[in-house]
Length: 448
Ligand code: ACO
Image (cartoon, rainbow, N blue to C red):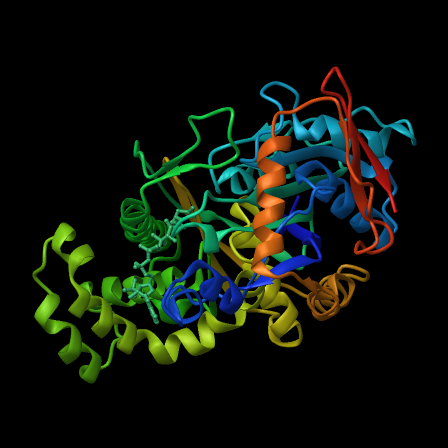
């Protein structure tokens, strides 16, 4: 199979959200901390009738319907998620309900988990399958689904929720440059979920920021080495039109992209002009550790990066700023923002993506845009996703209501024998919602 990659995409996020400005005031944080300091506008959250399973049912059924895909045409289904509802039964098996009705049980794949990286692992599995001898000619389907919630405290405004479905096949409008991948994997306790009775992670915020930036550097180095090897040229930020990052919050994306420019400066890439060289020269001899601690370097690199950021990164930031960290779905929500904003001018261009999952696993990889065949053209994908309408039709909740929902969800997490309110009045038609968890912990969903 040639030009294997993403042929269609859909995204779902809950219609329930809270404005960061209101949350900031409610939490007693200084004005501007969440909006300017973290760079976030709004945060989506699941109400008591939604969870990662309902969101993934919604997004998969929506994608199959919109593109008129016969469920029999799916040969592999992989889910990435770090929101554990069951320690054994995969989310993938819940999704099989959508395929049983048409008699398709011949679908490989299960769930992948490592913090925000599981979706990327699932995506690579599907792409590799289509490129392999095991491929049977059918589509792969990747689902990234997460509800990111934190205990009260500084991490709480970095939550979010969404599910994304990516249809994988040959002759894709969004094709993998499969040889161009650089990974960095290591053992770290930056963010983890050792308490199985709670949905909340244990997080060392400062360490997680440094781990993320170190992973950006290491992946970029490995990615550039692969580029040198296969393209016989030095890679710099000038060689990609867009850079798409896993987005816990926008400020970290700004800092990460600036690191790429600093790396380009260190290897004397031609995209760094003389004025920029002068700004970065004082930091040329910092050790790795020192370079992560230096506020002056951070500032100088962000200044140098600013014009590049505006063209190569800013178009990817819409949904992550509006919806928040969606864990496994976050990187792909940033990518969707790019397709939404730039679909008419992407053909022939390259996007480099950076995926990060705490603990830690990270990969930088490359995608190229092609003319897709109808209905899989970039403009049709953008039209089908209808991001503007989904953002506009949301319902803003007061922070008190959000906190109340978090309290209820704490009680419901891991619980059995309850029925939900079944109130689906805020949900769009076609949305799945949780109705009941019975005495055997079996979960039941309905479709609006
Ligand atoms: N106006 C403008 N900016 C402000 C204001 C204000 N009133 N107050 C603070 N700021 C700035 C700070 O200077 C800082 O910016 P800087 O980093 O450029 O200096 C920023 O706002 C955040 O403030 P901090 O004091 O650093 O925030 P705090 O430590 O309270 O929390 C953190 C931030 C650590 C990110 C926390 O939200 C967290 O733990 N989140 C979860 C972990 C996370 O997302 N890690 C990222 C990678 S791992 C993953 O994806 C889960």
